[in-house]
Image 1 (tube, rainbow, N blue to C red):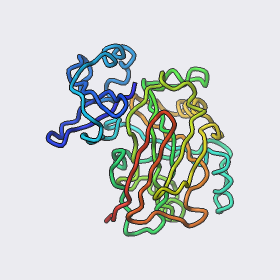
Image 2: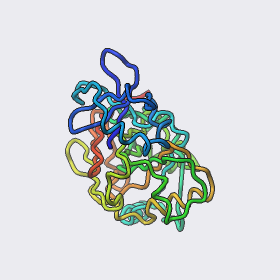
Image 3: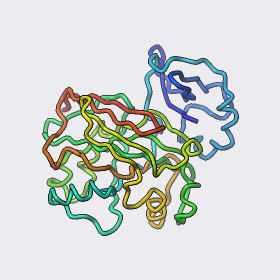
Image 4: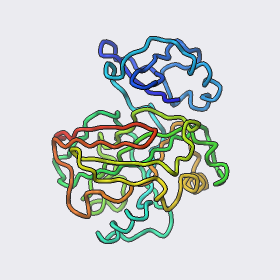
Length: 285
């Protein structure tokens, strides 16, 4: 299933919808669904038949506004330098390659929808892009083994881990500030449930800026795969339904070449089977 949060131009009330091709079906009348995807994630297996059979009002996707698929997640965590070629380009830029998984917070206040604007802060000229496979946790879990890790995944989405490089590498001793500016967490366009993806470690991912390809890899280039990531994190913390893991970006970011984003740039990220997000860079405060 592909499940999105959306609202209509005439009614800004958030709804859940099932995405089929270029249309979305309103799920408001399905018992137990409501308007919060985060709240129903643990119950998705039980709701699957009803959601797939729902015959609510259907709208063209172009006639609705898609919102961030996950409402009010407790955590948005990202792993740094988790693609082999990206780690090497970071090393060449003077950033040492970590010897273990390196995690940071993206504050959840940075999250915006799949087609919302990305603000370029006035205090920085080093605004960068990072396409990433977003993994959404489906159930509360702790001390999960690598072998069992897939069982706690609700599904996947496209994420752009937008980064302010000078704050990331120069103005803060941790990554959190440079990763958490408002609007720097576009995700979407919807949640694709895990059962629709044969192998999340074999998905093609691509990011373009104004139509020019900047990143073009597969998720198979990860150093630590998504199952190892979940096992590692759950040794430390309890992951909750709706928590988002940004699982690393491939080579091709702007930092090594100084090709940073400018106001007016159109940034499009797409991942095979998951759809695409597209965001325009706008002037920020």
